[in-house]
Each structure stands twice: as structure tokens, then as C-alpha cells.
Length: 90
Image 1 (spheres, helix red, strand yellow):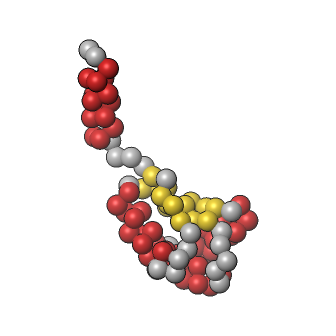
Image 2 (tube, rainbow, N blue to C red):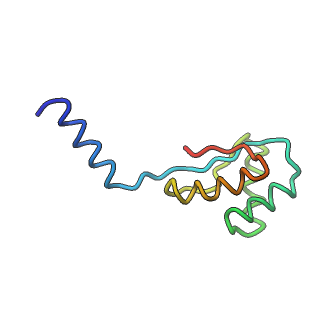
């Protein structure tokens, strides 16, 4: 089996398994209540959960909002981007 065939097999295996990604939010100069409100709107998480995410982002510089597949995270990310929060899907 050649190198090209090996690459195709590996890609095929990876495409059959959902890739788990993380939606990351970074600390920024936004009003605290706006961040919490937008996190709630985007995720549906309760107030305390959203506050915990915001505290972690504030103290550590970043926090994981949620893990999941890309499509699910992209929807949440779009809502967070409405107020120009700094985010990334990894």
C-alpha cells in the first residue's frame, strides 16, 4: 500500500468519527452584564454557569464555553459575535 492510499484511509476514518471541538471565549473589555446576557442567549445556560465561564475568561484570559461538533458551536459563536465578543472554535 502506497503513501497516498494510507492518507486516504486515515482521512476516511477521521470523517466517520465526529470531531469534538471547543468554543473558546477570550477576556475582553466588554460590560460584565452584557457578556453574561449574551452567553445566556447563545447557550441557554443558567446565570451561574454563564458567570462561571465569564470569571474563568476574566481571570485566566480564556474559557471554554462549550465542546461539541462544529455546526453546534458555530451557531453559539454567531450569537456571541453579535456584540463582538472575542471567540474561537478550536
